[in-house]
Length: 476
Image 1: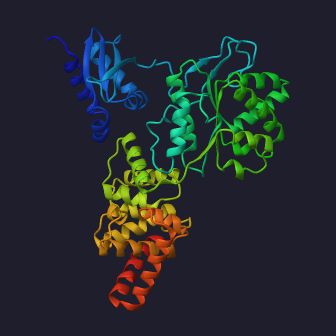
Image 2 (image 1 turned 90 degrees about the vertical axis):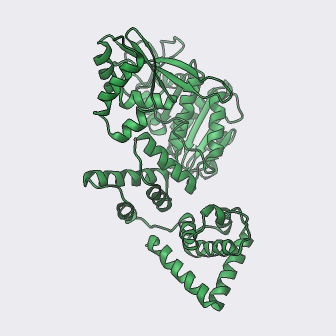
């Protein structure tokens, strides 16, 4: 019987199914379609670039094994990636060969350095003649895996504009700032990767401020300061992470000042990240701070509830995991500090369930979340208050945030505002924003109304007390 792409792939799937979990099989292998068999070359269609990269990163050894079992040792696998262009009648496909087995995982692609062999490259072993630079970009940190929301829309949009036209927008430098765990590093890598995708000839370099400083110290010791400066001045796109660690390091700031000036004057793109806005950076020279303000400073804030749920769903999709909606929502309501802790809580729950060979239940999630936040001050969030109030009145949370003036909804909204003011440190304007864009005067009016009803309506007072107990359980 003559082999077809369908018959070969069907046999491959039978083997794969025995070597991966049911959830991983459903997530990563069921969507694949065999499209062509040309001799010993099997072409499969995958839904996206992200999907292809995940297969290459996590399942390439298994894929090679099953393909060779069916087609022989000199067989090859090619990918057809669906690129959705909306109005196109047929999906546009691009063929990609399987990555070389000799290429290590997560190894960035070498970028030619214009053939200049005279300058020492601080990123390679001394003595190598050819000057190449690895972009130092993490291929897992892409725009596809960066969940967009109100908390990061400006920074993400500016980053995407920069990746389309590096050095050619008003966002130069682009400074992304925010607290720890908000996604600054992820976004910086995503911009660099997108620039490499759209402008393969550009020399892109990502470096942490600590590594930059250590390289500069080595250059001074070896009397190679000029090589150091010239190397960095050759970049088309320079990304420096955690610029705040330059604080107090006068010599490092001085050398970076000269590199910055050269890159900016020659139309090269500079991308910086920091845990503070430029105005709040201490120990930095004023001439540098003034240059940081030439472009755009965009902040990353803590994601809202919807974004936190989306981040958890994305994380689960990446890992081939499914959890009940109520558990995902509970984690998102409970962890409001930063994205890193949000993902850490999810991993802790999964690890605990796996080690004890238990199913992930809401009760297990609650136990793990309590342990996870036990050693930190756990302030109840506005999102959680709204959830408890909406559950109590049997209202969808969207109704609470709407403009409707129905009596029950108005009362629930006022109670949520009342608890948000008394049980959180949020400003009146922030509370109003969470309740459908109301202003601070509306929040004050709501709090006065609830206080008056507590004093005059025993039934209303009992409801408020019951709600307070429900909310306080989470605040302990």
